[in-house]
Amino acid sequence: MLKSIVHEIIGTPRREPDLPQSLEQFRDRKRVLIIFADAQDDRALIQDEWLRKAQMRLIEEDVEVFSIAGGGAFALFDDEWELDADDIRERLQGPPSGEFGLILVGRDGAVKLRSSEPRTAEEIFEAFEILPKKTPW
Image (cartoon, rainbow, N blue to C red):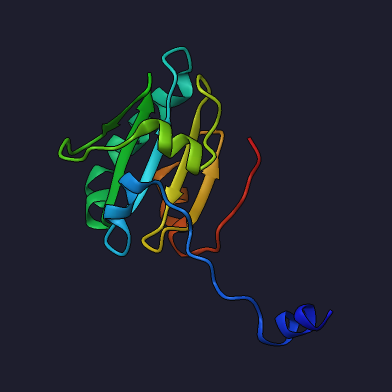
């Protein structure tokens, strides 16, 4: 009981997000947008088209965009990164394989946006400054 009172008064220490190891290289430097794609799902194509139209702004805002598909991770604009697709899906609690999903990770490593539907570039940019959202798949 004393322990719970102390936690109420001083609060609990802030726990750093448990990022996949391959995303740690972006912490405090870049935002990361992960698109979970399936070849059978048109939502991934829609999302890709919207992001390509906003490519310059994504680059200016230091956003790296990756597509997770078929067990691999592929950069949308820049191929110099090596990522572990399975670890990302597991640790970020991505959608089941074969389903569309979108996760935006902030510079601090926190999930800023999670969606099972495509999001416009403006919706993604708005999510940069809001608190983390948790939406079930």
